[in-house]
Length: 498
Image 1 (cartoon, rainbow, N blue to C red):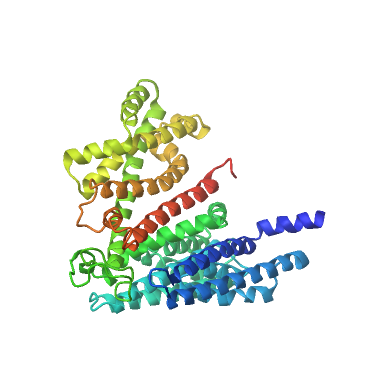
Image 2 (tube, rainbow, N blue to C red; image 1 turned 60 degrees about the horizontal axis):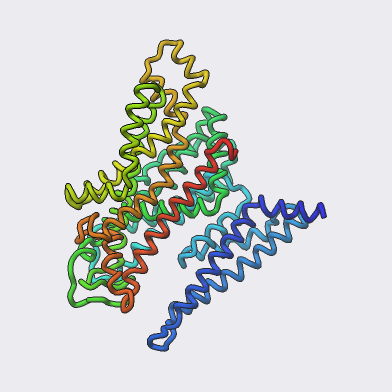
């Protein structure tokens, strides 16, 4: 009995086995979805491309199940995964080019025993870049593309190769505590691709620089522990990957997508079904739904992040001042915010937009105002607790000013709950943006935004359901991703959970 319990515990803490179960579930779900969509019930014919995808995903599911059984056997017999089993991860890496990020990620994790945070960042930076290349590459089937298309694609391919090389070097040279000194230069260079929106590249560069310098081992250890906890949460990693992918796609879309396809009417291509030229079909004005969703990500992300950062800064500052000074200052600030808090956020947003007009700036302001009280309350609670710590008393004794104590000593130590809250509320901001646009009170109707696209698609649910399904899926996945990553971040930063 003790042997069985030991094996079960080993299975729970072995990241490869956990990833295998996660991959098995999602590959099975996608296989079932492809099977359902492979038959056109209206015309009574099979869709050959979808049938092929179903066969590949089903085969991948069976392959992952077999690998998971081998991992289970290795752990029972040898207490570790054998080299022979790890070699089976390499074929799974190729599934990335079929869009199966779960199976390819599992393949990368299985392929090496040395899984540092840097290796994971390099792997997902590579996967993000490959997805960007594949999505952007679909534009070659259009009659024309932007002038920067070839240059941008060349840069994207070069970056993907760099990330893959870095993943190989990290697996061989980087340990949990340090990295070779010569990796300092690649680490600095990896900060540059953040201009393409690839956040994994930024994290990779920062972590390599910290380890190569080895200036503060305790800070490096703390950083590693935090990210190891996040990266062990498979759903949190998936959330961060999808957020990064959508953000990166929205940043680089101007270099590989033609905005005219998203906004100009094409009456010769009204309500076209998905084809190579129009991968997601066209709407009732002949506009390419694929291009509209890509450019719509820009608006949704800009509004979502802005409507989170602005109230976090304003509410955080008010909460810090209120919590530190207390008494009359606390009463004045918090009672005023209570009045604002009593008004439903969506109702307040509608009122502001109705008064000042529907546009992007007014929408950001409307969503930001209603969120200020919640951030102020969160910061105030943290400041009230931290203000009693000894290092704050020491700062007062040394003659530091109140503002210096608040913003240099207290606020930095109270940021963790604020960061977690901000991550969790980005999804809510995206939903509010889409909801108001759907009602005609958000982004201007002619601008491609997911709520506007969904509003058009809702009138064609019976005849052309894809017009509503695709933008709806994008909204759902982005909101779920924010929530998954926020949950993982909360578990990693919460001292009680630690």
